[in-house]
Image (cartoon, rainbow, N blue to C red; front, side, top):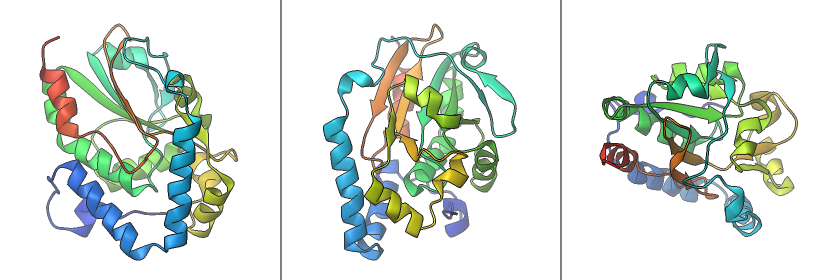
Length: 230
């Protein structure tokens, strides 16, 4: 269940562009994961791209749904509390078991001071339990809230939720990716990884959602967006 963090696997912090880190992880998967398993994941991504209608996902210009969630310490956090501090950068991730989610959050952790200097806050949302969020934050030394979206209720309002195909579920079970345990329910649902920038009035200023979980927006692009006058 544990993906080794950059801090654990190499001395110092990995300050390479996120795209390079993700490419390296994809290369390792191509080298060490059986071809038939890779094919299952590729089919799942392709099917998701065919099934998902773009209109389902919250677009730029729309009002983001308000939410109340528990953070990694079990404390209640509301979107209104976060937006009271300024613009909100919000990442929807799959969970601590996903190496691409880990890479993204570690990379966002590095640019957190720049996000805050631009007058914004950052938070990540996943369907994993509060305990799993606590473990993730502690393991990877993250300095922002990890919010637990039980049952993907908030992700569903953003139009991001999907049910894992049965053949992919079987692969995850064999690899000990126990989503019922990690997420605290038996629905085998995940959010499409997505990044939003939400204005103080709740309007989505930026949206990036990709059915291919191995692709994520570059943190420096997020910072640049926040720093550009609008």
